[in-house]
Amino acid sequence: MKKSMMSMIVVATMAISANATDYRVEKPEAWTAKDVPSAMKALYGNITPQEGAIKLKAPKVASNGGAIPVSVKTDIPAKSIAIFQDVNPEATVAVFAMQEGQVADVALKIKMKKSGTITVVVEGKDGKFYSKSFSLEVALGGCEG
Amino acid sequence: MKKMMLIIASMALMATATMANATATMTPTKVKMKIKAKEKNGIVKAKVAISHNMLTYDQAKKKGKEANFITHITATVGDKVVYDASTSQFLSKNPLIKFAFAGKKGDKIKITYTQLKGEVFFATKKIK
Image (tube, rainbow over all chains, first blue to last red; front, side, top):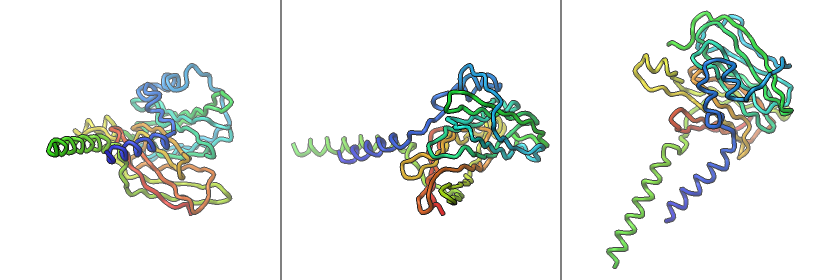
């Protein structure tokens, strides 16, 4: 009896502390969409993002398509930031649910099959959407190996 | 009567044991991660390197293995979430992530990630 109580309490506290948005659970179609416009629509609906004050950095020529450093920085008060690219089997790479106290400054390393364009969309707290794109060359494709 | 009680008690124990096993895959497992978290002027800059094959569906097919990659990463300080990323198979192998948030040294940061099948792993580090 005591054991089941304990496991119930553990599961309950785990559920409470996991109050972060899991976009993989909440927007499953965003992760199977093949092109950037469909992925954007699956994630955010019918939006028309405007070119925004977003610093999107990536190498102009990536020597290793399996590990391309990408960084996104913005002063726009952001609710979420999504990263897409247009050369892999699916378009969505990652979606950040911005947290209170978090600085809109994220970086990660991604895979790209070949040269293409990375698109970042920032969902502003003002309900508007902003985007920035960056095209790069990939010397060695990244989805193999 | 006592025998009946004993049988019922052992059945109950078995039931809770199977329940515990059911949640076992969701029970977070502690792993080693390279976590760097440094505070400066109230902002903590964090850099995390997670050891993970991040096997895409294509790569898995070629190797005759099952795809397995990280799908969700969170960072928490206490019970406050400071980073939350939903991720795809397109993060690099042994993903490296960087982020920043308002925090203070001495606090402990916990990085938790979930992979494709739902298993959860975590590591902690004190903020310097």
